[in-house]
Image (cartoon, rainbow, N blue to C red; front, side):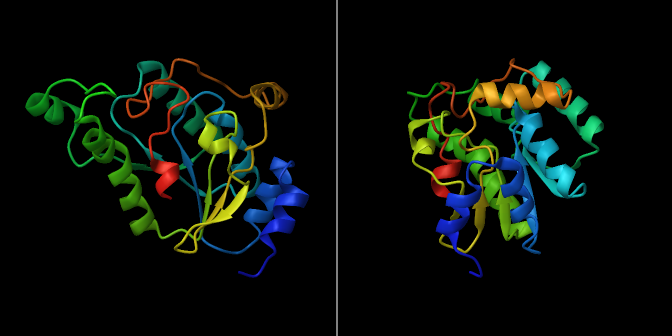
Length: 206
Protein backbone atom coordinates (compact mmCIF):
# COMPACT_ATOMS: atom_id res chain seq x y z
CA UNK A 1 0.00 0.00 0.00
CA UNK A 2 1.57 3.26 -1.12
CA UNK A 3 -0.71 5.64 0.79
CA UNK A 4 -1.86 6.39 4.34
CA UNK A 5 -5.43 5.09 4.50
CA UNK A 6 -6.22 6.90 7.74
CA UNK A 7 -5.01 10.20 6.32
CA UNK A 8 -7.05 9.72 3.14
CA UNK A 9 -10.20 8.97 5.14
CA UNK A 10 -9.56 11.98 7.37
CA UNK A 11 -8.70 14.44 4.61
CA UNK A 12 -10.95 13.31 1.76
CA UNK A 13 -13.65 11.22 3.40
CA UNK A 14 -16.14 14.10 3.44
CA UNK A 15 -15.37 15.25 -0.12
CA UNK A 16 -16.78 12.70 -2.60
CA UNK A 17 -15.46 14.34 -5.75
CA UNK A 18 -11.95 14.76 -4.35
CA UNK A 19 -11.99 11.17 -3.09
CA UNK A 20 -13.09 9.94 -6.52
CA UNK A 21 -10.28 11.87 -8.20
CA UNK A 22 -7.78 10.41 -5.71
CA UNK A 23 -9.00 6.83 -6.25
CA UNK A 24 -8.76 7.14 -10.01
CA UNK A 25 -5.32 8.78 -9.83
CA UNK A 26 -3.74 5.66 -8.32
CA UNK A 27 -3.12 4.24 -11.80
CA UNK A 28 -4.66 0.95 -10.76
CA UNK A 29 -7.36 -0.99 -12.62
CA UNK A 30 -10.63 0.43 -11.31
CA UNK A 31 -14.28 -0.51 -11.66
CA UNK A 32 -17.48 1.07 -10.42
CA UNK A 33 -20.40 -1.15 -9.44
CA UNK A 34 -24.03 -0.11 -9.78
CA UNK A 35 -27.50 -1.50 -9.23
CA UNK A 36 -29.35 1.51 -10.66
CA UNK A 37 -31.14 2.13 -7.39
CA UNK A 38 -32.31 5.62 -6.32
CA UNK A 39 -29.60 8.34 -6.56
CA UNK A 40 -27.27 5.98 -8.44
CA UNK A 41 -26.69 8.56 -11.17
CA UNK A 42 -24.62 10.50 -8.63
CA UNK A 43 -21.74 8.03 -8.37
CA UNK A 44 -21.94 7.17 -12.06
CA UNK A 45 -21.67 10.82 -13.05
CA UNK A 46 -18.92 11.45 -10.50
CA UNK A 47 -16.66 8.63 -11.71
CA UNK A 48 -17.22 9.18 -15.42
CA UNK A 49 -16.32 12.86 -15.07
CA UNK A 50 -12.85 11.67 -14.05
CA UNK A 51 -12.56 8.49 -16.14
CA UNK A 52 -15.23 8.33 -18.89
CA UNK A 53 -14.40 4.76 -19.91
CA UNK A 54 -14.31 3.21 -16.41
CA UNK A 55 -15.95 -0.24 -16.49
CA UNK A 56 -19.35 0.03 -14.79
CA UNK A 57 -20.34 -3.39 -13.49
CA UNK A 58 -24.02 -4.26 -13.04
CA UNK A 59 -25.16 -7.47 -11.36
CA UNK A 60 -28.57 -7.70 -13.03
CA UNK A 61 -30.55 -10.21 -10.97
CA UNK A 62 -33.41 -10.26 -13.46
CA UNK A 63 -35.80 -9.09 -10.75
CA UNK A 64 -35.56 -5.33 -11.24
CA UNK A 65 -38.70 -3.28 -11.79
CA UNK A 66 -39.60 -2.11 -15.28
CA UNK A 67 -38.91 1.45 -14.14
CA UNK A 68 -35.40 0.45 -13.01
CA UNK A 69 -34.62 -1.06 -16.40
CA UNK A 70 -35.87 2.10 -18.14
CA UNK A 71 -33.86 4.26 -15.74
CA UNK A 72 -30.75 2.16 -16.34
CA UNK A 73 -31.14 2.53 -20.08
CA UNK A 74 -31.51 6.31 -19.75
CA UNK A 75 -28.41 6.67 -17.54
CA UNK A 76 -26.34 4.33 -19.73
CA UNK A 77 -27.10 6.47 -22.78
CA UNK A 78 -26.87 9.80 -21.00
CA UNK A 79 -23.44 9.14 -19.49
CA UNK A 80 -22.22 6.85 -22.29
CA UNK A 81 -21.39 4.22 -19.70
CA UNK A 82 -18.91 1.45 -20.40
CA UNK A 83 -21.38 -1.05 -18.94
CA UNK A 84 -20.45 -4.64 -18.18
CA UNK A 85 -23.44 -6.74 -17.08
CA UNK A 86 -23.13 -9.90 -15.02
CA UNK A 87 -26.16 -12.19 -14.93
CA UNK A 88 -27.04 -15.27 -12.88
CA UNK A 89 -26.17 -18.54 -14.58
CA UNK A 90 -29.87 -19.30 -14.89
CA UNK A 91 -32.47 -16.90 -16.22
CA UNK A 92 -35.33 -15.86 -13.96
CA UNK A 93 -37.73 -17.88 -16.10
CA UNK A 94 -35.57 -21.00 -15.80
CA UNK A 95 -35.21 -20.66 -12.03
CA UNK A 96 -38.89 -19.99 -11.44
CA UNK A 97 -39.99 -22.86 -13.69
CA UNK A 98 -38.10 -25.26 -11.44
CA UNK A 99 -38.37 -23.64 -8.02
CA UNK A 100 -41.29 -21.25 -8.13
CA UNK A 101 -41.45 -17.57 -7.26
CA UNK A 102 -38.77 -15.70 -5.36
CA UNK A 103 -38.51 -17.01 -1.77
CA UNK A 104 -39.33 -14.64 1.08
CA UNK A 105 -36.53 -13.54 3.42
CA UNK A 106 -37.73 -15.94 6.14
CA UNK A 107 -37.70 -18.87 3.71
CA UNK A 108 -34.70 -21.21 4.23
CA UNK A 109 -34.13 -21.08 0.46
CA UNK A 110 -33.53 -17.32 0.45
CA UNK A 111 -29.79 -17.61 1.17
CA UNK A 112 -29.29 -19.87 -1.86
CA UNK A 113 -31.40 -17.49 -3.94
CA UNK A 114 -29.23 -14.51 -2.89
CA UNK A 115 -26.08 -16.48 -3.69
CA UNK A 116 -27.40 -17.37 -7.15
CA UNK A 117 -28.74 -14.01 -8.33
CA UNK A 118 -26.26 -11.60 -6.71
CA UNK A 119 -23.26 -13.00 -4.84
CA UNK A 120 -22.07 -15.55 -7.40
CA UNK A 121 -22.30 -13.08 -10.32
CA UNK A 122 -20.34 -10.52 -8.29
CA UNK A 123 -17.66 -13.02 -7.28
CA UNK A 124 -17.40 -13.98 -10.95
CA UNK A 125 -17.11 -10.31 -11.92
CA UNK A 126 -14.26 -9.76 -9.46
CA UNK A 127 -12.48 -12.88 -10.70
CA UNK A 128 -12.81 -12.03 -14.39
CA UNK A 129 -12.25 -8.26 -14.21
CA UNK A 130 -9.58 -8.43 -11.48
CA UNK A 131 -9.98 -4.84 -10.29
CA UNK A 132 -7.48 -3.23 -7.94
CA UNK A 133 -9.87 -0.39 -7.03
CA UNK A 134 -13.62 -0.78 -6.52
CA UNK A 135 -15.82 2.32 -6.37
CA UNK A 136 -19.27 1.89 -4.86
CA UNK A 137 -22.24 4.09 -3.98
CA UNK A 138 -22.57 2.75 -0.43
CA UNK A 139 -23.98 5.28 2.04
CA UNK A 140 -23.77 5.11 5.83
CA UNK A 141 -27.46 5.84 6.27
CA UNK A 142 -28.43 2.78 4.19
CA UNK A 143 -27.90 0.13 6.89
CA UNK A 144 -26.38 -0.10 10.40
CA UNK A 145 -23.53 -2.20 8.96
CA UNK A 146 -22.63 0.49 6.44
CA UNK A 147 -22.65 3.18 9.12
CA UNK A 148 -19.58 1.45 10.60
CA UNK A 149 -17.59 1.52 7.35
CA UNK A 150 -14.87 3.93 6.23
CA UNK A 151 -14.87 5.69 2.84
CA UNK A 152 -11.64 3.86 1.93
CA UNK A 153 -10.86 0.34 3.08
CA UNK A 154 -8.72 -2.53 1.85
CA UNK A 155 -10.12 -6.03 1.64
CA UNK A 156 -8.21 -9.14 2.69
CA UNK A 157 -7.19 -9.75 -0.93
CA UNK A 158 -5.79 -6.23 -1.32
CA UNK A 159 -8.73 -4.73 -3.22
CA UNK A 160 -9.06 -1.01 -2.44
CA UNK A 161 -12.75 -0.31 -1.80
CA UNK A 162 -13.79 3.33 -2.14
CA UNK A 163 -17.22 4.69 -1.16
CA UNK A 164 -17.05 8.39 -2.08
CA UNK A 165 -20.62 9.26 -1.00
CA UNK A 166 -20.53 7.20 2.20
CA UNK A 167 -21.20 10.23 4.41
CA UNK A 168 -23.67 11.99 2.11
CA UNK A 169 -27.33 12.24 3.06
CA UNK A 170 -30.26 11.78 0.69
CA UNK A 171 -30.46 15.59 0.59
CA UNK A 172 -26.82 15.83 -0.54
CA UNK A 173 -27.49 13.24 -3.24
CA UNK A 174 -30.63 15.03 -4.42
CA UNK A 175 -28.83 18.37 -4.62
CA UNK A 176 -26.07 16.81 -6.74
CA UNK A 177 -28.68 15.39 -9.14
CA UNK A 178 -30.34 18.79 -9.47
CA UNK A 179 -27.03 20.60 -9.94
CA UNK A 180 -26.04 18.30 -12.80
CA UNK A 181 -29.54 17.77 -14.20
CA UNK A 182 -29.39 14.01 -13.72
CA UNK A 183 -32.32 11.56 -13.75
CA UNK A 184 -33.52 9.57 -10.77
CA UNK A 185 -35.88 6.68 -10.04
CA UNK A 186 -37.47 5.49 -6.81
CA UNK A 187 -39.34 2.48 -8.19
CA UNK A 188 -36.61 0.07 -7.15
CA UNK A 189 -36.68 -3.40 -5.62
CA UNK A 190 -33.80 -5.63 -4.54
CA UNK A 191 -35.04 -9.21 -4.20
CA UNK A 192 -32.06 -10.19 -2.05
CA UNK A 193 -32.76 -7.48 0.55
CA UNK A 194 -36.53 -6.83 0.30
CA UNK A 195 -36.34 -4.49 3.31
CA UNK A 196 -34.54 -1.15 2.91
CA UNK A 197 -32.25 -1.52 5.93
CA UNK A 198 -31.32 -5.14 5.32
CA UNK A 199 -27.91 -6.23 3.94
CA UNK A 200 -27.78 -8.65 1.01
CA UNK A 201 -24.34 -9.84 2.11
CA UNK A 202 -22.30 -8.58 -0.83
CA UNK A 203 -20.59 -5.78 1.11
CA UNK A 204 -20.10 -7.95 4.16
CA UNK A 205 -18.22 -10.55 2.12
CA UNK A 206 -16.12 -8.14 0.04
